[in-house]
Length: 515
Ligand code: ADP
Image (spheres, rainbow, N blue to C red):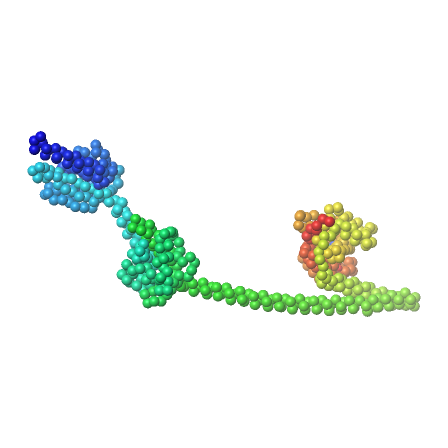
């Protein structure tokens, strides 16, 4: 083997290595003539620019240059012709799909054996991603800077690596006084010892969360004063370790308002309690007064009956014993006195009933209303034919009530139904029931004179009478007694009526258990 051929061999091996290196490079490596004609094109060039070797070789390198940068390549090649290298020249190149790639170019002259520049090798490093990341970081920094909260970033040694201007405002330090310092600088001295341990535990299990687990957190200003803060922790795990971006909010004002609000609430509760106590006291007093008044009126009315009976009795004796000695005028006066005494007695009886219904204590029981109505009719001739025909239908239900009060209610309603009979029409009265699982409506229907609509609203009030006293004598207390009794049994009463046609009274009570 001659010396020359061994040199050629060595050169051949080196060239093969170089070709392999070029092929496997991550950067696009493009060879070209001094006129810009592409003469070599590696795999990475295909990846960066999108053209394969067959498409690129023999083409002008202007294929890759955006129109707005058309003069650039000529300037680079001019420098290469002079034997210069162009290092890390950041520019933009066009991909096959028309998109722009950010590249960093290093262009070197290619020389022949005699040292003459015969071409250029161009290494293009795609920095698009890097640029994008850089831009994003810049944006992020701007956002953090503009954030309304204090923002501080800490590395995994607990050193402050970034702060925004709000942090300067909150803590009174200059940025330069915080950067590079331990984050413990920002917390009161009494918490400083425990903090590094808490920080390490957090770094073991980083998560986005509020710091302090609901405890009050205090921060410390440069001047040593303290203030309450909320701190949100955002971990960022990087190859260099866990960085934590903490958002710090001064909550002094919020806490003050919360405390003020709590105080207002407490004051209001106390005030409400005082008012409730006052109302309870006054109500009790009122109940007592009412009870006393009721007691007085009860005994007064009760005591009135005695003398009244005496008057009734004596008048009747005089009429019976000395009737033939009296003239017609005297007889009429005495008869009128008896009638007036009877009316007064009736009124006293009704007032006593009303008071009894209002005051008596009772417990509710299941009452068979159908049976009760039939019994009431049987005991009172005035509720039987020929005065009236009362039909009690089979569906009258059991209700929860007090039997004596219910008897009063039914008697009053039936007596009215018979009393307010339409002239010239046979009185027909119907009692029936309907309802649901909880409530029963008991209906008392008549075909009597009816009640004008405008009078119906007042019907159940004390002493309210609609029809003329002479034709229909009464006290105006019957329906007031009905309402009081029904309401005390937990129910309600209402009326529907059409003048000249008839009236329907509905008593609504809770359904009674079947027995
Ligand atoms: P009283 O029957 O003693 O007059 P109530 O309180 O029982 O008093 O009734 C009040 C008024 O309601 C009666 O005066 C009457 O005008 C009217 N009223 C009550 N029931 C009926 C009825 N079934 N039909 C027509 N009017 C009635």
